[in-house]
Image (tube, rainbow, N blue to C red):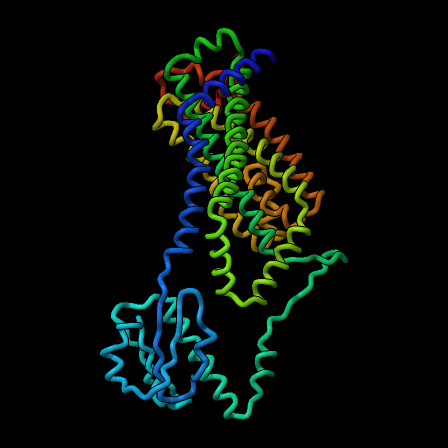
Length: 431
């Protein structure tokens, strides 16, 4: 045990002292901070004010544009009888756009024209079209003796209450799906990045023949476990540091750009109606209260660790068996397939978290770290999760024992191309 601890400490200290580890650990939170700052500055300063002059010969839209003004678009409704030809020559002295509304047939509202010196943005064009369409619709409804207020009431969105197993559920399922997706995707990234790191570490030591010196003092199994645990500890350290540093960076950005962030939030809220904003905020608040945060954190740590062990043992076995990088790519491809299938299956799981594909995917150890983690925010039954965890633990022990039998022989093989058939023989070979 002491030798394993020594190998773990060696792997851990060697890697966390590398410049690449320090730079990447510091760079990621800084990139997040730079992204936040860029988003705030672009949202608050990137948009220019657009002034629109409205000439309305139909007299149907008087005062209808004043309520549409926001921080970036301002309307002026022309109150005199200046001709269109005269306005086309002079509007650009004070305005960016001239909106001309001729006398129109409400059943065929053609002829409305925008004059500008440059192409319009999609938002401005859509805003003007929506305002005109809404006003024409209301006028036609009144002409046909329809009650506009009653129609507006009929257009209200229906809110559905959910009662699952005689217990009322709050909030929307999209929040559970979002959290499930983030957790599953983080585990997917961790498996790929740090599994590949185990593979590279083993192949490098094998190529440099350092491993031949190491196996004279420790057993191959101890060497493999020390490397897997040491690199896993490096990954956990990096994730924890990213979380802490990202929080600090976001806090500092929030303090420095507090006014700009408040302005950005006001702009976002102005793009949606106040009732929609309140509804969304209420849904999010209720949905967060309804989530079992402690279960999600516990499950994430469990699947994070055992999912890593399950795949890292296989990466270590492949690293010990191959003799160069091209062989490593060939042997790792079959190992990558179940990981990639898992990320595809996760999208199906988020649509139907209790479907047959989701259940089977969360039980198989090849996909359970990603699939079960994406189902847990939907409150999957505990018995299903416990069975999934037991299967994963047993599979980890079995795959580690299997990988160790490959590792003990593979690390001593030099300059020889190996095949899957030969690796299969190593598993049953007595040493």
